[in-house]
Image (tube, rainbow, N blue to C red):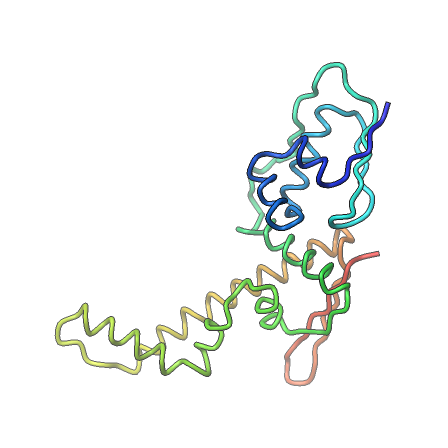
Length: 207
């Protein structure tokens, strides 16, 4: 005995209320949620096969179990070695590639995090275009909170260090996700170094 589910049918049958709401709102569910739903299906079926991508996925379940199986959990390190927000980043990358129909131009890591909306453009602009504005706001807060506060050039150094550290960490996390998705052949990831030490990253759905 076997049964074929569409994505909507699968989520409605095995998904949580939160996952059902996400499907209703976005028309799909993140990769992490989908994998969780598949685990739930495997408690009831011996074989679960997924074909297609995105909203067109078809899930074929066969061999209905007489007794519901214990939920499979392969975690062995309780999250050690995983990046904070890694599953969300993976979902953002795959969703972006699908929406762009895999037609992606090479982009720097900074451009990638902006395209994926991981970082608001206001934050990156604070490093260059609007840094005087943000520095003024920062110094005003210091003036309001610290009696006899005098403006100091080091104020901007502190602001710049914070933004650079955050952007560097975010870009590093994204590149790590690219590498992991590439390793399991979900995507093809190419890094190109050009004169001056800069680099662009080309990413597309794996084959």
